[in-house]
Amino acid sequence: MKDRRYPRLAFVDLETTGGTAGSDRITEVGIVEVDEQGVREWSSLVNPDMPIPEFIQSLTGISDAMVQHAPRFEDLADEIDARLADRVFIAHNARFDYGFLRSEFRRIGRDFHPPVLCTVRLSRKLYPQFERHNLDALVARHGLHVTERHRALGDAQLIWQFWQKLHEAHAADAVDETIEKLLNRPVALPHIEALHIEDMPDTPGIYLFYGEHDAPLYVGKADHLYRRVQAHFSAGRMPPREQQMMSQVRRVEWMPTSGELGSLLLEARMVKQLQPAFNHFARDAEVCAWRLVMRKGVLQPELITTDDLFFGVDPDLYGLFVNRRKACDALRAVVNVYQLCPRLLGLEKTRKREACSAAAGTCAVCSGEESPDMHNQRLRTALKGMRLQPWPYANAIAIRENDVLHVIDSWSYLGSVMNNEEAVELLRKGRGRFDREVYYITRKWLSKADAAIVEL
Image (tube, rainbow, N blue to C red; front, side, top):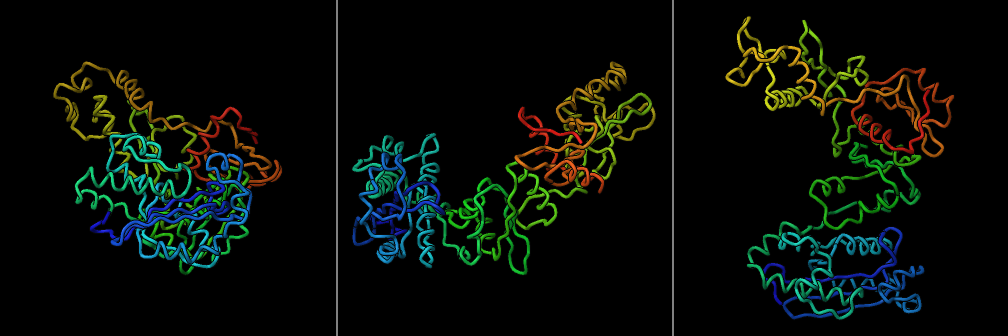
């Protein structure tokens, strides 16, 4: 079938030893080439130079014996490159297939940057009424003819059949417009070998991307550092912002941690410290909350920032906002929903005995139907869902994770140490300011029944 805008197509499927491009290998390649000259099919087994797990052998039917004498990828690289050259690379879950091929080409020192289109994403866009879009679902939904399921060429044939079905079912302009939005154009990324990540451990930790002149680009966390960083450089379709970031990477650093909690806390600290260009963060000075203060028998909200000595400890704080405008918008929304009196709350300046702006049949205080005490109670009820949890300990604590103690004081992360003596030494250096990210991380962690807490 000839495509009017994308005349050279390659429908690709791979079988592999597992799901991680950085450590697993290809066992079979299947390609259906479509162009003005017609349709051609090609496939080959690939010797992965590693055992195939039993469950993979059971799924695909490809055994160790079948690939023992098959060509290695480097022997097939020229053939595969020629068949994919100047074509749109089309695969189902294209990130997987493209990632594996790109990793294999990089192992032999070659680039691989075709335009990539994922038919999972294409199916979701063109058939949004359906929940499932895996290959088995497409077979059942569109009546595709199965030759060899879970074999490379058989699955590549299914993708080609689906392509024909969607062109029959939708107007050409609609299909072209959708493809154009989803098509991942080649982006030049740095050679991963040049970034010297061979020694990166596959353990929990954080990684840091730097650009020209060592400008911080991004800080991320991972349960498996090496695999996560490999995935960044092996991705198929990337959002434009991620493409922009990855094309700028010139150096990678990493810091192993004791586990998930250590990664979360260290990531939050480094993002705040480095302020990388591609991370979202809130500066401490901007974070604020409402404190309820009693004035002449009336509770009124007072906006405070993290500079306040009792921020995070005071039991009468509500909300966490990144700036004053958002804090005021949230409070006014509560006032409107619960029909509170803006004059009594100090949000409106009026003359003595003058009613508030909401008095026309809605303000019970200004109409004399509600006392200040009743209004105080309704205000607390209205703000209950926004209440900031006060620090629940008399002093600082350490949360044990494997062999490491993470020292937290009043929602501030002071550091990670190996023993109680080092924790006490950290505390002698002084407490930190309330940290919004640490608050969210630690509050969630403290709710875990198996959290190992040591009070200091």
